Length: 57
Image (cartoon, rainbow, N blue to C red):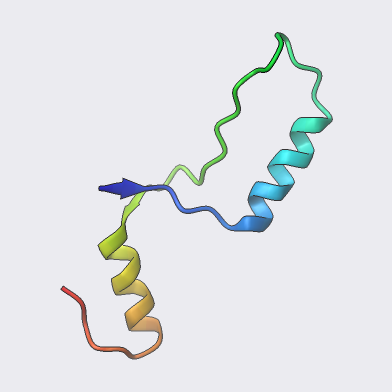
């Protein structure tokens, strides 16, 4: 299963930028993401490697 994890400051900036844009229609959808989906396992493996935890697998 892939997920698109996003840094919270980037989400906040995107939301604030969206407030400054006049919508072309009522309630336009916004897709805020990194564009780089990863598996939850890959994320866990990266985190484990960063903190010198045992490998996951």
